[in-house]
Image (cartoon, rainbow, N blue to C red; front, side, top):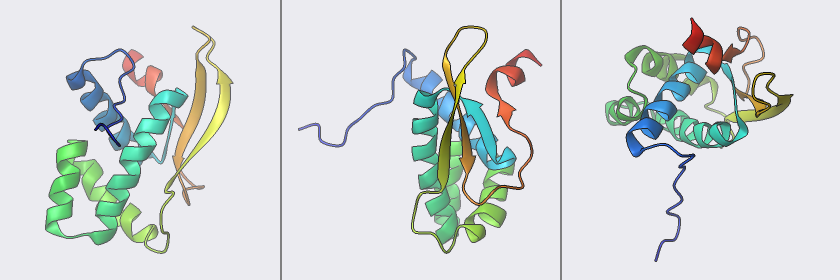
Length: 133
């Protein structure tokens, strides 16, 4: 049976999906918030919640598990040194999705994905603006 075997596809290969999620989780941890589409935000939120749970435990094994998923040593350091201890009192729900409206260029729905308890974070990072720069 295929219970709990949901795959986030959105028309990309497995390698492309893995890189997309790893980069977006790293950006979310480093910047505190990211502007993206709701489909990507839901998947990145799920993965980020798992990474924050690893960071709350904080041992070497969980740090290596997070590094396998995120692939960015600086983001893993920030996750374990800052985000994990800050989320220590929460039982889950470490991310928040806020709908923003449609994107101007292609009309795609956009949303703001942010870490909870991060109200003093820098302005949101638009994933399309990073690619243009």
